[in-house]
Amino acid sequence: MSKHKIVAPDDASSRLRPPYASVLDLIGQTPVVELTKFDIGKCRLFIKLESQNPGGSIKDRIALSMIAAAEKQGRLKRGGTIVEATAGNTGLGLAQVGIPKGYRIILVVPDKMSREKIQHLRALGAEVRMTRSDVGKGHAEYYQDMAEKIAAELPGAFYANQFDPANPLAHETTTGPEIFQQLGGDVDAVVVGVGSGGTLTGLGRYFAKVSPKTEMILADPVGSVLAPLIKTGKMVEAGSWTVEGIGEDFVPPNADLSLVRKAYSIPDKQSMLAVRDLLSKEGILAGSSSGTLLSAALRYCREQTVPKRVVTFVCDSGNKYLSKVFDDFWLVEQGLAEQEQHGDLRDLVMRTLRTGDVVSVGPDESLLNAYGRMRRSDVSQLPVLDEGKLVGIIDESDILAKVEGPYDSRWDRFKAPVSTAMTSTLHTLQASQTLDALLPVFDRNEVAIVFDGDEFIGLITRIDLINHLRRAR
Image 1: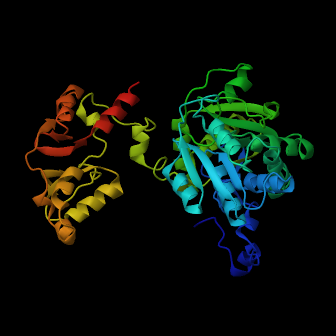
Image 2 (image 1 turned 30 degrees about the vertical axis):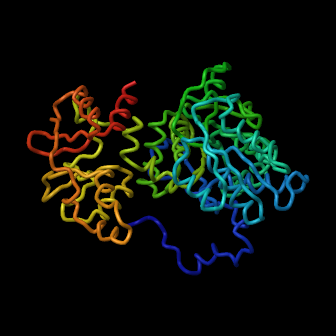
Image 3 (image 1 turned 90 degrees about the vertical axis):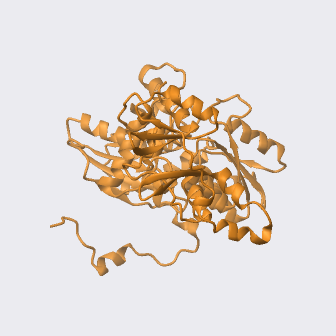
Protein backbone atom coordinates (compact mmCIF):
# COMPACT_ATOMS: atom_id res chain seq x y z
CA MET A 1 0.00 0.00 0.00
CA SER A 2 1.26 3.51 -0.80
CA LYS A 3 2.61 5.43 2.15
CA HIS A 4 1.64 8.74 0.54
CA LYS A 5 -1.40 10.41 1.98
CA ILE A 6 -4.22 11.28 -0.39
CA VAL A 7 -5.19 14.87 0.33
CA ALA A 8 -8.85 15.24 1.22
CA PRO A 9 -10.75 18.16 -0.29
CA ASP A 10 -10.79 20.09 3.00
CA ASP A 11 -7.02 19.71 3.39
CA ALA A 12 -6.36 20.58 -0.25
CA SER A 13 -8.29 23.81 0.09
CA SER A 14 -5.66 25.07 2.52
CA ARG A 15 -3.24 25.25 -0.43
CA LEU A 16 -5.62 27.36 -2.48
CA ARG A 17 -5.45 31.13 -2.62
CA PRO A 18 -7.86 33.76 -3.96
CA PRO A 19 -7.14 35.01 -7.50
CA TYR A 20 -3.90 36.95 -7.92
CA ALA A 21 -3.87 40.39 -9.50
CA SER A 22 -0.97 39.51 -11.81
CA VAL A 23 1.14 36.54 -12.80
CA LEU A 24 4.07 38.48 -11.30
CA ASP A 25 2.51 37.92 -7.88
CA LEU A 26 3.25 34.21 -8.36
CA ILE A 27 7.01 34.76 -8.27
CA GLY A 28 8.50 33.18 -5.16
CA GLN A 29 6.92 31.12 -2.37
CA THR A 30 7.88 27.97 -4.28
CA PRO A 31 7.28 24.54 -2.69
CA VAL A 32 9.88 22.24 -1.11
CA VAL A 33 9.83 18.45 -1.62
CA GLU A 34 11.78 15.85 0.35
CA LEU A 35 13.68 13.38 -1.86
CA THR A 36 13.23 9.80 -0.65
CA LYS A 37 14.30 7.61 -3.59
CA PHE A 38 18.04 8.35 -3.53
CA ASP A 39 20.86 7.01 -1.36
CA ILE A 40 21.47 9.97 0.94
CA GLY A 41 23.17 8.22 3.86
CA LYS A 42 22.20 9.59 7.26
CA CYS A 43 20.83 12.86 5.92
CA ARG A 44 17.48 14.19 4.79
CA LEU A 45 17.57 15.94 1.43
CA PHE A 46 15.05 18.56 0.34
CA ILE A 47 14.68 20.28 -3.02
CA LYS A 48 13.05 23.65 -3.62
CA LEU A 49 11.07 23.76 -6.87
CA GLU A 50 12.05 27.09 -8.40
CA SER A 51 10.69 25.67 -11.63
CA GLN A 52 7.26 26.62 -10.27
CA ASN A 53 7.91 30.32 -10.85
CA PRO A 54 5.84 31.66 -13.79
CA GLY A 55 8.90 31.95 -16.05
CA GLY A 56 9.97 28.46 -15.02
CA SER A 57 13.15 29.28 -13.11
CA ILE A 58 14.78 30.82 -10.05
CA LYS A 59 15.81 33.80 -12.19
CA ASP A 60 12.28 35.24 -12.06
CA ARG A 61 13.16 36.44 -8.57
CA ILE A 62 16.15 38.51 -9.61
CA ALA A 63 14.42 39.85 -12.74
CA LEU A 64 11.63 41.27 -10.56
CA SER A 65 14.17 42.71 -8.12
CA MET A 66 16.47 44.25 -10.77
CA ILE A 67 13.67 45.88 -12.72
CA ALA A 68 12.09 47.28 -9.55
CA ALA A 69 15.45 48.68 -8.42
CA ALA A 70 16.17 50.23 -11.83
CA GLU A 71 12.73 51.88 -11.90
CA LYS A 72 13.17 53.23 -8.37
CA GLN A 73 16.63 54.61 -9.19
CA GLY A 74 15.45 56.21 -12.43
CA ARG A 75 17.70 54.06 -14.62
CA LEU A 76 14.70 52.55 -16.42
CA LYS A 77 12.09 54.88 -17.87
CA ARG A 78 8.58 54.11 -19.09
CA GLY A 79 8.70 52.47 -22.54
CA GLY A 80 12.45 51.97 -22.28
CA THR A 81 14.69 49.11 -23.44
CA ILE A 82 16.20 46.40 -21.27
CA VAL A 83 19.36 44.72 -22.62
CA GLU A 84 20.87 41.64 -21.01
CA ALA A 85 23.46 38.93 -21.61
CA THR A 86 21.77 35.71 -20.62
CA ALA A 87 22.21 31.97 -20.38
CA GLY A 88 18.47 31.92 -21.01
CA ASN A 89 16.67 31.96 -17.69
CA THR A 90 17.46 35.50 -16.57
CA GLY A 91 16.36 36.66 -19.99
CA LEU A 92 13.12 34.71 -19.61
CA GLY A 93 12.60 36.32 -16.22
CA LEU A 94 13.26 39.81 -17.59
CA ALA A 95 10.87 39.21 -20.48
CA GLN A 96 8.27 37.73 -18.13
CA VAL A 97 8.44 40.83 -15.92
CA GLY A 98 9.42 43.54 -18.40
CA ILE A 99 7.20 42.96 -21.44
CA PRO A 100 3.88 43.27 -19.51
CA LYS A 101 5.26 46.57 -18.19
CA GLY A 102 5.78 47.82 -21.74
CA TYR A 103 9.55 47.50 -21.99
CA ARG A 104 11.46 46.39 -25.09
CA ILE A 105 13.69 43.41 -24.28
CA ILE A 106 16.93 42.65 -26.18
CA LEU A 107 18.79 39.53 -25.08
CA VAL A 108 22.24 38.35 -26.16
CA VAL A 109 22.38 34.57 -25.90
CA PRO A 110 25.33 32.16 -26.36
CA ASP A 111 24.73 29.66 -29.15
CA LYS A 112 24.86 26.61 -26.84
CA MET A 113 21.50 27.47 -25.30
CA SER A 114 18.68 24.98 -25.78
CA ARG A 115 16.21 25.48 -28.61
CA GLU A 116 13.29 25.50 -26.16
CA LYS A 117 14.72 28.45 -24.21
CA ILE A 118 15.24 30.50 -27.36
CA GLN A 119 11.74 29.69 -28.65
CA HIS A 120 10.28 30.63 -25.26
CA LEU A 121 12.11 33.98 -25.30
CA ARG A 122 10.89 34.84 -28.78
CA ALA A 123 7.34 33.72 -27.98
CA LEU A 124 7.31 36.16 -25.05
CA GLY A 125 8.25 38.96 -27.47
CA ALA A 126 11.95 39.34 -26.66
CA GLU A 127 14.49 40.14 -29.39
CA VAL A 128 17.18 37.45 -29.32
CA ARG A 129 20.71 38.07 -30.61
CA MET A 130 22.78 34.87 -30.88
CA THR A 131 26.53 34.93 -30.37
CA ARG A 132 29.43 32.53 -29.86
CA SER A 133 29.77 30.39 -26.73
CA ASP A 134 33.41 29.42 -27.37
CA VAL A 135 34.98 32.81 -26.61
CA GLY A 136 35.86 34.45 -23.30
CA LYS A 137 35.55 37.83 -21.66
CA GLY A 138 37.28 40.53 -23.69
CA HIS A 139 36.37 39.05 -27.07
CA ALA A 140 34.05 41.20 -29.21
CA GLU A 141 31.57 38.32 -29.55
CA TYR A 142 31.56 37.36 -25.86
CA TYR A 143 27.90 37.54 -24.87
CA GLN A 144 28.33 39.94 -21.93
CA ASP A 145 30.64 42.33 -23.82
CA MET A 146 28.28 42.28 -26.80
CA ALA A 147 25.27 43.11 -24.61
CA GLU A 148 27.10 46.00 -22.97
CA LYS A 149 27.97 47.39 -26.41
CA ILE A 150 24.35 47.19 -27.59
CA ALA A 151 23.14 48.93 -24.42
CA ALA A 152 25.74 51.68 -24.78
CA GLU A 153 24.67 52.39 -28.37
CA LEU A 154 20.91 52.58 -27.60
CA PRO A 155 19.77 55.90 -26.10
CA GLY A 156 18.14 55.35 -22.71
CA ALA A 157 18.74 51.60 -22.67
CA PHE A 158 19.12 49.85 -19.32
CA TYR A 159 21.78 47.13 -19.16
CA ALA A 160 20.35 44.57 -16.76
CA ASN A 161 23.58 43.40 -15.22
CA GLN A 162 23.13 40.19 -13.24
CA PHE A 163 26.02 41.36 -11.08
CA ASP A 164 23.85 44.20 -9.76
CA PRO A 165 23.37 44.22 -5.95
CA ALA A 166 19.63 43.69 -6.54
CA ASN A 167 20.44 40.09 -7.53
CA PRO A 168 21.71 38.76 -4.18
CA LEU A 169 19.23 41.00 -2.37
CA ALA A 170 16.36 39.07 -3.98
CA HIS A 171 17.61 35.82 -2.45
CA GLU A 172 18.52 37.38 0.89
CA THR A 173 15.02 38.81 1.29
CA THR A 174 12.86 36.10 -0.31
CA THR A 175 14.50 32.74 -1.08
CA GLY A 176 16.41 32.48 2.21
CA PRO A 177 13.49 33.32 4.51
CA GLU A 178 11.24 30.91 2.59
CA ILE A 179 13.68 28.01 3.05
CA PHE A 180 14.19 28.79 6.72
CA GLN A 181 10.44 28.83 7.33
CA GLN A 182 9.70 25.77 5.19
CA LEU A 183 12.33 23.67 6.99
CA GLY A 184 11.21 24.82 10.43
CA GLY A 185 14.34 26.85 11.09
CA ASP A 186 16.57 23.75 10.93
CA VAL A 187 18.89 23.88 7.89
CA ASP A 188 22.37 22.34 8.03
CA ALA A 189 23.49 22.91 4.45
CA VAL A 190 22.36 24.62 1.25
CA VAL A 191 23.77 23.40 -2.09
CA VAL A 192 23.90 26.04 -4.83
CA GLY A 193 25.52 26.69 -8.18
CA VAL A 194 27.10 29.93 -9.32
CA GLY A 195 26.30 31.69 -12.56
CA SER A 196 26.15 35.30 -11.46
CA GLY A 197 26.72 34.48 -7.77
CA GLY A 198 23.50 36.03 -6.51
CA THR A 199 22.01 32.86 -5.04
CA LEU A 200 25.20 31.95 -3.17
CA THR A 201 25.78 35.44 -1.81
CA GLY A 202 22.18 36.26 -0.95
CA LEU A 203 21.53 32.96 0.83
CA GLY A 204 24.96 32.97 2.45
CA ARG A 205 24.35 36.40 3.94
CA TYR A 206 20.88 35.48 5.16
CA PHE A 207 21.86 32.22 6.85
CA ALA A 208 24.96 33.78 8.38
CA LYS A 209 22.56 36.03 10.29
CA VAL A 210 19.77 33.63 11.22
CA SER A 211 21.49 30.21 11.25
CA PRO A 212 25.30 30.35 11.57
CA LYS A 213 25.48 26.53 11.51
CA THR A 214 24.17 26.42 7.92
CA GLU A 215 26.93 25.56 5.45
CA MET A 216 26.98 26.88 1.90
CA ILE A 217 28.03 24.16 -0.55
CA LEU A 218 29.06 24.92 -4.14
CA ALA A 219 28.10 22.63 -7.03
CA ASP A 220 30.26 23.51 -10.04
CA PRO A 221 30.58 21.86 -13.46
CA VAL A 222 33.98 20.43 -14.38
CA GLY A 223 35.64 23.07 -16.55
CA SER A 224 34.53 26.01 -14.42
CA VAL A 225 37.23 27.86 -12.49
CA LEU A 226 35.25 28.34 -9.27
CA ALA A 227 35.49 25.00 -7.45
CA PRO A 228 39.23 24.62 -8.20
CA LEU A 229 39.79 28.16 -6.92
CA ILE A 230 38.03 27.37 -3.64
CA LYS A 231 39.90 24.07 -3.22
CA THR A 232 43.41 25.26 -4.14
CA GLY A 233 43.32 29.05 -3.96
CA LYS A 234 44.60 29.14 -7.54
CA MET A 235 42.90 30.35 -10.72
CA VAL A 236 43.06 27.59 -13.32
CA GLU A 237 42.44 27.82 -17.05
CA ALA A 238 38.76 27.40 -17.83
CA GLY A 239 37.60 24.38 -19.79
CA SER A 240 34.25 23.73 -21.44
CA TRP A 241 31.06 22.22 -20.09
CA THR A 242 27.59 21.41 -21.39
CA VAL A 243 25.45 22.21 -18.36
CA GLU A 244 23.66 25.54 -18.84
CA GLY A 245 23.39 28.48 -16.46
CA ILE A 246 26.12 27.71 -13.92
CA GLY A 247 29.91 27.64 -13.94
CA GLU A 248 32.16 30.53 -14.94
CA ASP A 249 35.53 31.32 -16.49
CA PHE A 250 36.00 34.22 -14.05
CA VAL A 251 34.86 35.10 -10.54
CA PRO A 252 31.59 37.05 -10.79
CA PRO A 253 31.58 40.28 -8.76
CA ASN A 254 28.44 39.12 -6.93
CA ALA A 255 29.97 35.79 -5.89
CA ASP A 256 31.28 35.93 -2.33
CA LEU A 257 33.27 32.70 -2.43
CA SER A 258 34.34 33.16 1.20
CA LEU A 259 30.84 31.96 2.13
CA VAL A 260 31.50 28.51 0.60
CA ARG A 261 32.35 25.76 3.10
CA LYS A 262 32.93 23.05 0.50
CA ALA A 263 32.94 22.83 -3.30
CA TYR A 264 32.36 19.91 -5.68
CA SER A 265 33.32 19.68 -9.36
CA ILE A 266 30.67 17.64 -11.16
CA PRO A 267 31.26 16.14 -14.65
CA ASP A 268 28.58 16.80 -17.28
CA LYS A 269 27.83 13.10 -17.64
CA GLN A 270 27.08 12.81 -13.91
CA SER A 271 24.83 15.88 -14.04
CA MET A 272 22.82 14.48 -16.95
CA LEU A 273 22.39 11.11 -15.25
CA ALA A 274 21.32 12.73 -11.99
CA VAL A 275 18.65 14.96 -13.55
CA ARG A 276 17.24 12.02 -15.50
CA ASP A 277 17.19 9.98 -12.27
CA LEU A 278 15.36 12.85 -10.57
CA LEU A 279 12.59 12.47 -13.14
CA SER A 280 12.43 8.67 -13.18
CA LYS A 281 12.70 8.24 -9.39
CA GLU A 282 10.93 11.28 -7.98
CA GLY A 283 8.81 12.49 -10.90
CA ILE A 284 10.50 15.92 -10.94
CA LEU A 285 11.33 17.38 -14.37
CA ALA A 286 14.35 19.64 -13.96
CA GLY A 287 17.02 21.31 -16.07
CA SER A 288 20.66 20.34 -16.49
CA SER A 289 22.07 22.60 -13.75
CA SER A 290 19.73 20.93 -11.26
CA GLY A 291 21.56 17.69 -12.05
CA THR A 292 24.82 19.33 -11.03
CA LEU A 293 23.30 20.58 -7.77
CA LEU A 294 21.69 17.23 -7.02
CA SER A 295 24.94 15.34 -7.68
CA ALA A 296 26.84 17.61 -5.30
CA ALA A 297 24.08 17.38 -2.68
CA LEU A 298 24.14 13.57 -2.85
CA ARG A 299 27.92 13.49 -2.47
CA TYR A 300 27.75 15.86 0.49
CA CYS A 301 25.00 13.82 2.16
CA ARG A 302 26.84 10.51 1.74
CA GLU A 303 29.99 11.98 3.29
CA GLN A 304 28.26 13.00 6.54
CA THR A 305 28.73 10.89 9.66
CA VAL A 306 25.84 12.50 11.55
CA PRO A 307 22.30 13.25 10.33
CA LYS A 308 21.88 16.61 8.58
CA ARG A 309 19.09 18.47 6.84
CA VAL A 310 20.24 19.57 3.39
CA VAL A 311 18.40 21.62 0.77
CA THR A 312 19.12 22.25 -2.89
CA PHE A 313 17.17 23.53 -5.90
CA VAL A 314 15.39 22.67 -9.09
CA CYS A 315 16.79 25.80 -10.73
CA ASP A 316 14.54 25.57 -13.76
CA SER A 317 12.10 23.28 -15.51
CA GLY A 318 13.34 20.39 -17.63
CA ASN A 319 10.77 21.17 -20.33
CA LYS A 320 13.39 23.60 -21.68
CA TYR A 321 15.81 20.73 -22.28
CA LEU A 322 13.67 18.03 -23.87
CA SER A 323 15.69 18.23 -27.10
CA LYS A 324 18.97 17.94 -25.18
CA VAL A 325 19.23 16.39 -21.72
CA PHE A 326 16.21 14.13 -22.21
CA ASP A 327 17.10 13.12 -25.79
CA ASP A 328 19.07 9.85 -25.77
CA PHE A 329 20.59 10.53 -29.18
CA TRP A 330 21.77 14.01 -28.18
CA LEU A 331 23.51 12.59 -25.12
CA VAL A 332 25.33 10.02 -27.25
CA GLU A 333 26.32 12.68 -29.79
CA GLN A 334 27.76 14.79 -26.97
CA GLY A 335 29.65 11.84 -25.51
CA LEU A 336 27.52 12.03 -22.34
CA ALA A 337 26.04 8.54 -22.55
CA GLU A 338 27.63 5.15 -22.87
CA GLN A 339 27.45 3.38 -26.24
CA GLU A 340 28.88 -0.02 -27.08
CA GLN A 341 31.85 0.36 -29.42
CA HIS A 342 32.64 -2.09 -32.23
CA GLY A 343 35.46 -0.34 -34.09
CA ASP A 344 33.51 -0.26 -37.35
CA LEU A 345 30.61 1.59 -39.01
CA ARG A 346 28.13 0.40 -36.37
CA ASP A 347 29.64 2.98 -34.03
CA LEU A 348 28.35 5.77 -36.28
CA VAL A 349 24.78 4.60 -36.90
CA MET A 350 22.87 6.70 -34.37
CA ARG A 351 19.38 5.38 -35.16
CA THR A 352 19.06 1.72 -36.09
CA LEU A 353 16.19 -0.19 -37.61
CA ARG A 354 16.75 -3.00 -35.11
CA THR A 355 15.87 -0.75 -32.18
CA GLY A 356 12.99 0.91 -34.02
CA ASP A 357 14.67 4.33 -33.98
CA VAL A 358 15.00 4.82 -37.74
CA VAL A 359 12.72 7.53 -39.13
CA SER A 360 11.48 6.20 -42.47
CA VAL A 361 8.74 6.54 -45.07
CA GLY A 362 6.85 4.02 -47.22
CA PRO A 363 6.94 4.03 -51.04
CA ASP A 364 3.18 4.57 -51.24
CA GLU A 365 3.12 7.51 -48.84
CA SER A 366 2.88 11.03 -50.24
CA LEU A 367 5.78 13.40 -50.77
CA LEU A 368 4.02 15.72 -48.32
CA ASN A 369 4.27 13.00 -45.65
CA ALA A 370 7.96 12.54 -46.39
CA TYR A 371 8.60 16.28 -46.20
CA GLY A 372 6.72 16.59 -42.90
CA ARG A 373 8.63 13.69 -41.38
CA MET A 374 11.95 15.25 -42.39
CA ARG A 375 10.95 18.55 -40.80
CA ARG A 376 9.73 17.03 -37.54
CA SER A 377 12.79 14.80 -37.20
CA ASP A 378 15.30 17.46 -38.29
CA VAL A 379 16.79 15.24 -41.02
CA SER A 380 17.33 15.85 -44.73
CA GLN A 381 16.83 12.30 -46.03
CA LEU A 382 14.71 9.25 -45.25
CA PRO A 383 15.12 5.55 -46.03
CA VAL A 384 12.13 4.18 -47.95
CA LEU A 385 10.98 0.89 -46.39
CA ASP A 386 8.47 -1.57 -47.79
CA GLU A 387 7.48 -4.23 -45.23
CA GLY A 388 10.78 -3.68 -43.42
CA LYS A 389 12.93 -3.93 -46.56
CA LEU A 390 14.91 -0.99 -47.92
CA VAL A 391 13.69 -0.14 -51.43
CA GLY A 392 15.05 3.37 -51.83
CA ILE A 393 16.07 6.64 -50.28
CA ILE A 394 14.56 10.09 -50.66
CA ASP A 395 16.09 13.45 -49.76
CA GLU A 396 15.20 17.12 -49.98
CA SER A 397 16.53 17.49 -53.52
CA ASP A 398 14.40 14.56 -54.69
CA ILE A 399 11.25 16.17 -53.31
CA LEU A 400 12.15 19.59 -54.69
CA ALA A 401 12.81 18.21 -58.17
CA LYS A 402 9.41 16.51 -58.16
CA VAL A 403 7.25 19.36 -56.84
CA GLU A 404 8.76 22.41 -58.55
CA GLY A 405 6.77 23.69 -61.52
CA PRO A 406 3.51 25.61 -62.16
CA TYR A 407 1.95 26.91 -58.96
CA ASP A 408 -1.63 25.85 -59.77
CA SER A 409 -0.72 22.14 -59.80
CA ARG A 410 1.89 22.14 -57.05
CA TRP A 411 -0.40 20.67 -54.41
CA ASP A 412 -1.18 17.70 -56.65
CA ARG A 413 2.54 17.07 -57.07
CA PHE A 414 2.99 16.99 -53.26
CA LYS A 415 0.34 14.22 -53.24
CA ALA A 416 2.48 12.04 -55.51
CA PRO A 417 3.80 8.82 -53.93
CA VAL A 418 7.37 8.68 -52.63
CA SER A 419 8.14 5.90 -55.13
CA THR A 420 7.93 8.44 -57.98
CA ALA A 421 10.74 10.58 -56.56
CA MET A 422 12.97 8.26 -54.54
CA THR A 423 16.37 6.97 -55.61
CA SER A 424 16.18 3.20 -55.95
CA THR A 425 19.72 2.53 -57.21
CA LEU A 426 21.54 2.26 -53.91
CA HIS A 427 25.22 2.06 -53.04
CA THR A 428 25.53 0.24 -49.73
CA LEU A 429 28.23 -0.45 -47.16
CA GLN A 430 28.63 -3.32 -44.71
CA ALA A 431 28.59 -2.60 -40.98
CA SER A 432 31.95 -4.35 -40.56
CA GLN A 433 33.74 -1.81 -42.78
CA THR A 434 35.88 0.96 -41.30
CA LEU A 435 35.52 4.74 -41.39
CA ASP A 436 37.67 4.97 -44.53
CA ALA A 437 34.77 3.52 -46.52
CA LEU A 438 32.68 6.63 -45.83
CA LEU A 439 34.81 9.19 -47.63
CA PRO A 440 34.10 8.02 -51.22
CA VAL A 441 30.37 7.98 -50.38
CA PHE A 442 30.44 11.54 -49.09
CA ASP A 443 32.57 12.64 -52.07
CA ARG A 444 29.64 11.53 -54.27
CA ASN A 445 27.31 13.69 -52.11
CA GLU A 446 25.49 10.58 -50.95
CA VAL A 447 24.47 9.35 -47.52
CA ALA A 448 26.02 6.07 -46.34
CA ILE A 449 23.52 3.19 -46.33
CA VAL A 450 24.70 0.51 -43.93
CA PHE A 451 23.78 -3.20 -44.03
CA ASP A 452 24.72 -6.14 -41.84
CA GLY A 453 24.66 -8.90 -44.43
CA ASP A 454 21.23 -8.58 -46.07
CA GLU A 455 19.73 -6.61 -43.16
CA PHE A 456 19.39 -2.81 -43.37
CA ILE A 457 20.89 -1.23 -40.23
CA GLY A 458 20.65 2.53 -40.78
CA LEU A 459 22.16 5.65 -42.34
CA ILE A 460 25.36 7.58 -41.68
CA THR A 461 25.58 11.26 -42.62
CA ARG A 462 28.47 13.70 -42.64
CA ILE A 463 27.32 15.14 -39.32
CA ASP A 464 27.35 11.64 -37.80
CA LEU A 465 31.00 11.29 -38.84
CA ILE A 466 31.85 14.73 -37.44
CA ASN A 467 30.18 13.85 -34.13
CA HIS A 468 32.08 10.57 -33.98
CA LEU A 469 35.43 12.27 -34.61
CA ARG A 470 34.68 14.92 -31.99
CA ARG A 471 33.78 12.30 -29.36
CA ALA A 472 36.99 10.43 -30.08
CA ARG A 473 39.17 13.36 -29.00
